[in-house]
Amino acid sequence: EFYKIFQDEIGEVYQKVNPSREERRSWRAALDKQLRKKLKLKPVMRMNGNYARRLMTQEAVEVVCELVPSEERREALRELMRIYLQMKPVWRATCPAKECPDQLCRYSFNSQRFADLLSSTFKYRYNGKITNYLHKTLAHVPEIIEREGSIGAWASEGNESANKLFRR
Image (cartoon, rainbow, N blue to C red; front, top):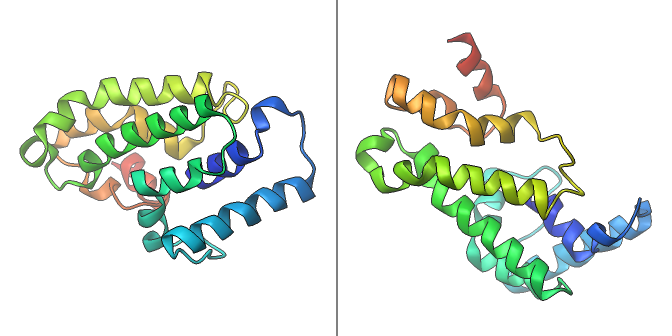
């Protein structure tokens, strides 16, 4: 999701209607080139865990922001990543209530703010709809923790884990 948002921000999709395939390709090329040059990140066909972990950092956002024309949009990207990084420890922890109680307390507020940002600033991408996985991450984490004390089964990055959640 972040990779796609980065791409769209480089191309200023919020101002355009239906950009062509070639335009999109050129934004992806610019993003990959920048990530390769500044972060030594090699683009991969399918985004693997290590690539995603390196991409989802404040440092990566700063590198991407160099390509984003508008200062206002850069700030929105930084804010989005800041919130994401505050939420991440909660779903990575085995027992969030013990390991990161502060982040857990702020989780609902952060996820609300994250969703608001997506639905306002990035509405060109999430116009009234949000992906299933993103929704589960934003909306259901606190209630799972309250019920079970952990989201271990659910924390693996991938939608297969959501099946475990629903089987329960």
